[in-house]
Image (cartoon, rainbow, N blue to C red; front, side, top):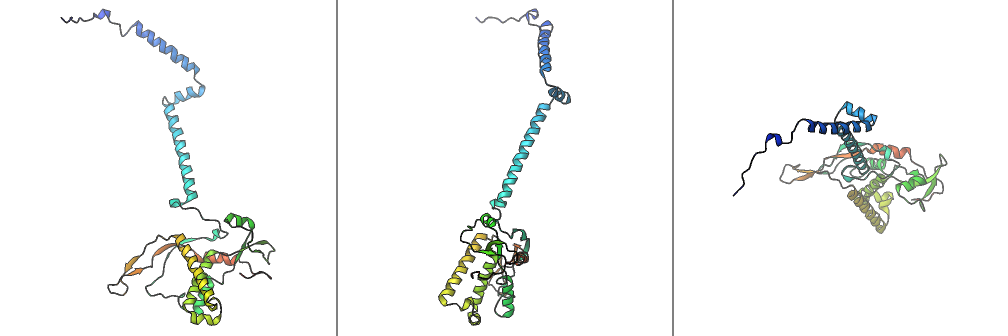
Length: 273
């Protein structure tokens, strides 16, 4: 038979108030006073300012950590550039670079001051290619670029007496290659004046092959990701590519001015190149 439960008389219950609780209060009061005596002056001052100072301190430290993390990320991004792009390789002409938006001028039927043959067209091409002098850089700059100075053409600037290495800016070589291909397109006109197009057939073909591959590597290196649309320029059902698109370009005149100002003339006895 189940035993009957009986209630415990109130007088048998452990009192929740009174002397017992006072003892607990005294115990914790003693510990608090002891801890208070062990606190440093800074801790006491912080406790007086706010009872939540430990959380505030954690928040400040966390903010500082996030700040340093953000700065580190930004510095890394700056080194590699947008979308993982590496920074410019060193060139003595880096300071001449200026960026601008340009719309390419490429109508369906080629025309313009650089198209065709003749004195006016030749003058235009000479302005952007063969009329640009080479320049000179130091041994330290050669190494900074990543070029081996050993065996490179050393020269002395006749105006200053300084020694260095003769170098040429790539863009003018690339334009020279395009100009050769233009002249070969009008070979019957240009070969009578001598020059590259008057070279033996085998040599001319080799020169043009060199230019084609140089320009191929440059175009693939740049990897232009601009896009062009298709339109109907002749009012029929035949769509043509519309290459008159905007591009971010380096200002050519700024680069040409730098090259002319830093040009070094040929010195007596310097081998042709």
